[in-house]
Length: 329
Image (tube, rainbow, N blue to C red; front, side):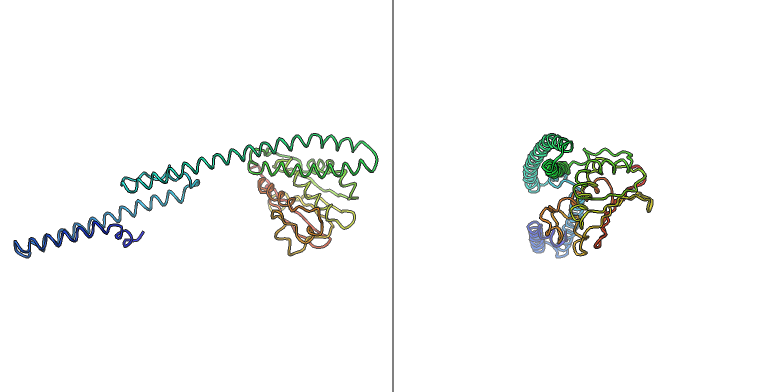
């Protein structure tokens, strides 16, 4: 706020004071000695100048306090509740208008949050209900022989994966409430993932080599979710039978877990965007089954688990690396 802008708002009282000074000077000049009029005019001018200076400094400090409150507020629609209530009548009118708008915004936000929470709960319930019969179908097919059963199990696996993604998307805004960080054995998590996806790997003719040791602090169920997405990618973009290597190592004070495949690779132009939502890239557009969600969900979950995920690729050698913190959070 500049002094000129503030003074412009004080135009009426300043003009009235100047007119008063002139009137008093003229009156006293006709009825007394001229120096008396000069003294009175000078005193009035000095008082007016002091009033304007003090008023400007006071107003500037008040505006600075309000601006500081506004900038530090996380929820801008609550400003009317934290901004100091003004004392001037005109300012109070604007303040009351702002409070009414703020309360209306709070009501709309609360209603939207309640509706979103209800939709999330409905989605989670629907996904859980869907997973029960899918699990049963997969179990029955795994114990049965015949090409038809293999195909049914394969399609059930695809549906199961999509329901897992839907469940994660429903929970993603409240991921902190569905995480249980604990010390877990990497080899056990990898073995569980390979066991759960054995049929997919067998049907694809995939070979998997593992060299995994050590333990990390993370949520094993969501780590398994990430590894499943990486396995599916390796199978989906393989050249012939997929060749997959999963290994762990200690590096830079942390534990790393790498998933390597010998598939067609990721073009260099696509590599910077592979974790973007909906991005399928050149290879994804050729493969009509690509959704552009798998790696996006991997990145979101890794961020939530404080895991650094990165990728490098060239034809015949694609490597995804997960880096964990070595100490308990």
